Length: 310
Image 1 (cartoon, rainbow, N blue to C red):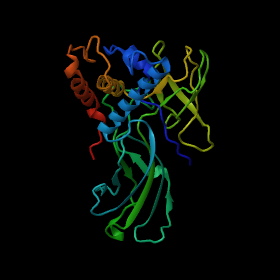
Image 2: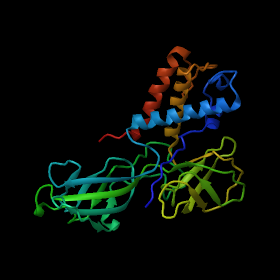
Image 3: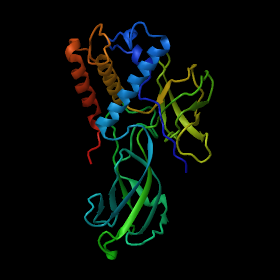
Image 4: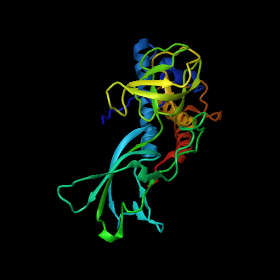
């Protein structure tokens, strides 16, 4: 299994400039800057806004693959044996999409000799809605859960307190990527920078001119056996329109994208951008001096359903 870090921000410069932000993007970084320098500055703002979203949520919202080890049963409140014999295992990164693999071994065994556990022995406590088996991404609030239910016998008091060590590899978050090359109407295979979590997912191409929904039926990694990183997505039906390289393809709820946009507006004002209309996403008129804080507050309100609590 190969894991490659994704890189697409949660919004693109094109998405920034076509939204009613009230920002004169021609002034960033300066009016005299070249088109290449202006686009680089806009991309930096998009990346900073993405970091602000993940920092507030205390977890990456984009789909990632993580490996986590927990020991129980005992004092670890993340491992709780339930009255029916199953065990509730609270993982660190929500929303949990699926368990990819798992192993267990006696916690006191050195060196460890992990024993594989079939993934069918785990269930997602609160499945993520609006991504898989749905016609469109959720508008907001469908944030899923961060716990899995392990079958009876994986943890047991019979072996004593903190006797078992469980290592879980799991997929979490919302699939998010961008096109790495131009695509045309009628194409059913699109090249992207990150395939993580896309198998069976329903997402949106956020082209500023022609947005369209897509459903992914096949995922092909560039690196054989990789679960994320670059590759191609085969769609269940051909594209209806042409799209340029760099267009965002995502399952992120719209509210999360709007939060990133609000953080981007705030960041642009910090960098000295001028505000024309100085309006918030909620269409409330403000002054340039207080708009930065207003945008931050509104972004954080939109992100509350996606914030990690434990």
